[in-house]
Image (cartoon, rainbow, N blue to C red; front, side, top):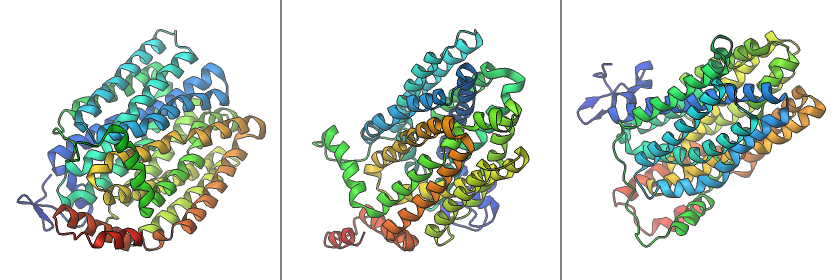
Length: 450
């Protein structure tokens, strides 16, 4: 790919500053390319597993509650272990931490594939392996998110963040679509073999990333001091706190619909595994469109407005999907959910990553990771209520709660109303502090203004 066009120049190389080629400029940096392709492989395998495991659990048990129990067995270890993983990622070589944890996930899924292929898989096997996977994810994701700014020059950082966030969130929707479509031709065992191969591929790409030693820090700080400092930093920075709260809202209220997709396919529209594949595929189409759209929004102002509109649109599309009277009407609605949620989560994650300093980045990313552990607080009640009130009604109610919660978050955090100005000011603070040009007298005033 030729990047010798007009645009920013870094290390003697010119990068395009406009057009679709500029969307992928960061991929010309070899270290980042290894990171990016490894991330796509890993999250592709992880999100493909969501639909395959859900279909397998529902096939084994026929129970919505069993689906929620599997989600709980993944999410609770993430909720508990993610802060520990964040502290460790700020203290060790992030690349090796990620490689070892990814190897554990690969081994677990290889064992799972063998059990399925030999016909001896049972529900309790899936629970135990889900607990192990959730624990490993707690170390992988903080390390992976925290190393990103170490791989790119400053003038490509926002482009790389947008690409990474877009790709990571796209796999949440595209990979389940592929997984659903694989069930009919090669079966559940074949699908798990494919996602296990993706986990192996992610390990291979990770060896192309350079070693990333921890940032310089006070050697006297203990593990527990680091643990507390991460939460203290978030509490004192109102913008970061608000963004994390806002980012959690769709996880709790919107994401349970993915857990319940097998129920929609089998019991609501009676379309079976083929229909499940189509539902997840249309969500993937919307997610991919949203990812390509948001990758060129780095210079677009009013990011707070973008997040608000996208979050509200997610709720509207989700309610329309849940209440669709026919299967054909549900397909474009689930595509709308994928597009709107992609835009929202990518902008949210990119803003968070860009404003936090390197020495606490792993810990802040681990708190973001904890939001995945909060998913059962939506998925478990939704699954239980679905058995009594019906899956469509419960998902539609979740969409209404999503809209109400987003409105409440914008009322609680006025920083969202002038988000771009706050982002620019915090970036200037980070750059000045890094260059040694920030005077101590300015810190109290800036902290008070947050």
